[in-house]
Amino acid sequence: MSEMNISNTVATESHVVYEVSGRVGCITLNRPKALNALSLSMVRELTKALLEFQSNPQVLAVLIKGNGKEGPFGHFCAGGDIRFFHQAALAGDTSLSDFFTEEYALNHLIHTYAKPYIAFMDGVVMGGGMGISQGASVRIVTDKTQMAMPETHIGLFPDVGGGYFLSRCPGRIGEYLGLTGQKINGPQAIQAGLADGLIEVQRLPMLWKTLLSTPFESGEAVERWIQSQFTKLEATPFPNKAEIDQFFAMSTPLEISLALAQDNSEWAQQTLDSLNKASPLMVHVVLSQIRKARNMGLADDLRMELDLVHHCFHLRERSETVEGIRALAVDKDHQPKWAHGHLSEVADAEWPAFFVSPWTPETHPLRHLS
Image 1 (cartoon, rainbow, N blue to C red):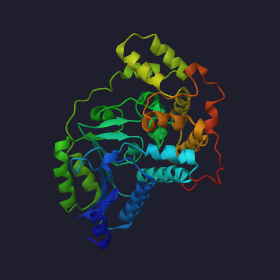
Image 2 (cartoon, one colour):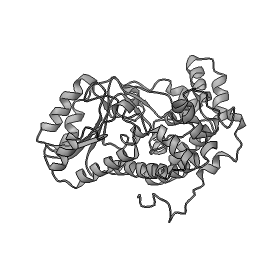
Image 3 (cartoon, one colour):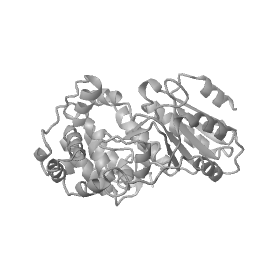
Image 4 (cartoon, rainbow, N blue to C red):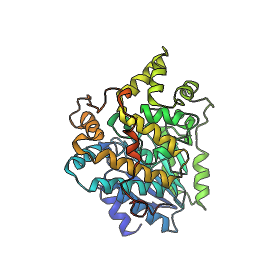
């Protein structure tokens, strides 16, 4: 082990611990008290680790997991550090835009990574946690996985490439998950095309140990071995898929909500309830985001999402996102005062403004992504 790796392993204060062991590069998100929520420094450490591993011939594949409060596995990553977003937005702190620019570049790096990248998506996997796992070549869920893109409930949108990967879910599952923020489990994530296989939590420590000590001959051999460990699951469809495909194919959020309101089933009423708790403005933005992204490559989608996130925060006190985070994580009153009381109150001209880029193609902060 090199001196750098020793110092990284010993520095328990580090929120990202990484080292080479055997033929694999190992990354552990080490901020368990915050459910491994990503800070700007963590985004930078992850980028640094991945670039080092990519150029190291000893490393055939990269593994990433989250540290838990009780042990070496736990909640993968609950997303970005939303309290930081709130403070930085109100203060006009430029590190907020640095965070999103560098995070989206990291997401792109993972999707286009030159070596197998294997994500152990145990426990909570939300928002930014999806951004650092959906580009993996092997996406592993567990019997404890809780996956969601709940951003509309804080006046934001499913970013980190969410437009790209949600729009590629079967049928209209992407619109459903993006608009409602619905939480799904491991088997449902596989059915939604957001995971590749399931491994029970109790098997993970031994599997991780084996990956670190086996003299694999290639990156493909690492992938094949971990895929051979997947638990066999019955092939069942995503819950309520027929209803999801029917309602979430409608052309506007208002049409979706009116149709749900006329359906007396428990599923429809719960779905309508989730939709009504979300920011009416951002529900309009998100439906358009996912549908635009269906015909976009990843780089263009991430550029669009950086445009969107700029509009989400630049209003400071009047920002829907700042208000949503205040209600959830700062004052914790869970009573966001959205700009609109209902989906029907959002004017047709309001949400398209989010898609107008504040940059030219030549000056866009993510112009280098291809």
